[in-house]
Length: 460
Image 1 (cartoon, rainbow, N blue to C red):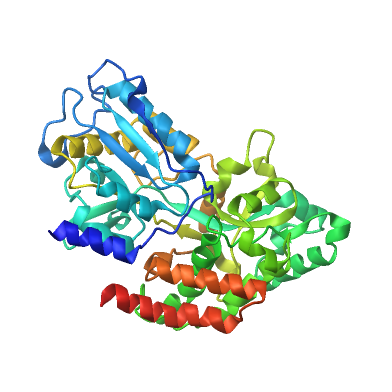
Image 2: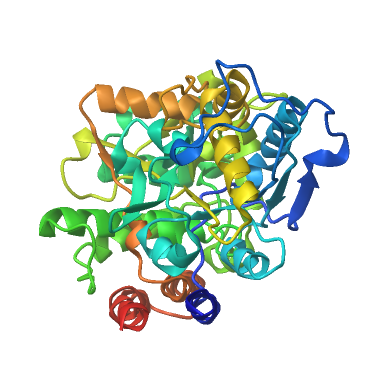
């Protein structure tokens, strides 16, 4: 009854994960790695065999099955390939279903109620865990939990460990250094919001001569608006939390919303299109503008790396990621926005053998040569596990360089946003403001008043 109530509550609240994805809006897809399964049902060799969970002996033959509901569309192919490799090696069937961008929570709500629900799913942080904790297996004592480099990468409910982070990501303003140089500037010329503003407005003033704009379109359709209602909105939240010495709140004060307005204005007034057109611009539009050399700056994250390099696209020499400056704090020592909203949860409602199969699969992913190589190279992930391989991702390397130089990463506080509805209302207000059909007061109201209302609704 408790789980039925939790599911009904989830359906009523319709909380969804903030997408840290490429914005691809493909239909939900699935591949089952049992299309051509291996007949070899032995476990991997002793050096890579998954350790038994909670003290039980590891299985000596393939039992159970894994169904992973994947959150990240841009990594779908890589996960399908990794699942197939695991099935070939162990004989255990692994199905990967990838939710279309910005539909993960709705897809999970639908799938979790089926007779064969996901054995492995994702939550985006404490708010997401609160919605799904009744479905989360306690990972305490599991082999995969023992591979984490720090307990800080877990989410708990009391003494129970219900979720573990599987990657760390960074986002900022991706920059085409070649175009920036054509405009007469270098990365070193941009160390603050005022620097960024001066460069962007100069590029806009000479855009006809230069043949490109400052920023790609700040698209506000569902495949793109998360970059601004979630990721960009993280900045004023972060600085307010720093001032107040808190990590969450039931009532945001909006101290830095003037700064939020300044950076959003900079984006929409120095873009590849007029602000009124942004409501129909997609994530693909923004990426394609950047790939075509139509703009110097593109707000996005380290997950975009594989979409931008290789196959006749950019090389590492062409690109850089700079911090999102909004004119607050010690900007000279500000780093990239770095953190995670990606936490694995094992479904405690699955059959016992499927739970164990899922735990074994996770252990293999983060310890085996095949798994760690795929996550580092094919997915460009930085994973917080002991056997992690170094990622070739340029933006990951730059984040490390910023930190090594003493710059402070901006933490991900958007996981404390009170609800998906809060984000949607903020996105609507931003869209209306850009189109000229609404004013900034509407954005402030959605941000501040909406926060209090949604927090009360979720925690009343």
